[in-house]
Length: 412
Image 1 (cartoon, helix red, strand yellow):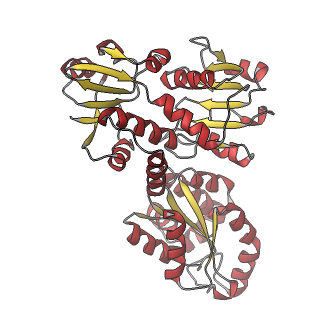
Image 2 (spheres, helix red, strand yellow):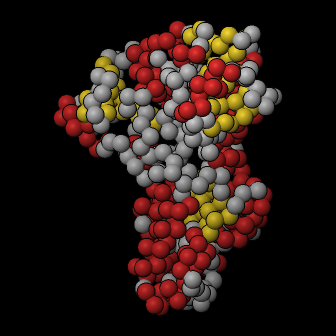
């Protein structure tokens, strides 16, 4: 390894892609078991590496030099080998600070609640303190390292103005969890989540729904990667590099989720997008058919619509954690808010708004097999589609132009 990242579980790391966009060097992702860290660090046959969970503190005894921010935080995420001497840095401080600024969150004079007590929690505390927080409270399940219990948070600290999640709750593959309920916090002004996969955790989705400035950890990951690369290469990058890399990674990882009426062209548009983007096409109706072993009309006939909706929710739940895909949903997928929430975690939702008179009923669509059925569904669902969508695509045009409009928005 010349350059790379070490950690225990890295199958879904974005770091290799990020560094490929920052500079021209080979960057390797290497999973190292806990009993292999000692040999790896003693050998230190690398030019420079990033270090992630759970080794940010483990590597410290092997270092010859640690910069002041890393000492303050007590964790190292970047190591540079200079003539056999190992120099340790913490670029997470820069990353979290950059994320807060981009989100419009100002710590000055604020009460900050930090969830978790691990290495990233220490970074969050250092950033909040350095940027003038009035009070900092840390919470954990066992009240360790000076943290309070979550029960005490609800009793005494619901006046927190900024919340930072540094726990793994809500992280891939278990993307449905939420570490705390935001409804209890009446003075909340901002929420940050260090998790970047999914890009929007349930915590972030709730904050955004409440109109609170909030962001997941992808920009933090990019910004700390840019600062780490500066250590690697001894170069200083222009400020625009973070934004350029973030936009590219965000576009690559964001699912294009298609919603709309039966016969609106979701599957056809999805196929075009998948080909143009070189992405997989995930069709929830097809997933239901494959899993149940029967066509959708037969499911309705034998088990009823409620059973079908349950299967639909299962299909949505199975595709929601995936990133970088095109997802075509059934016409009624938006009828359950839980489905929309799941699709938003890694997706940008496009409503293919085809005019009613262009929707053709077919026998294989149980809720839209006649003209009157189509009309009824259209009037029942139209506002639901609009409210669920991030972008409304005018589909009173050709399928190719619909696809082009989505591509233009997704890729910026």
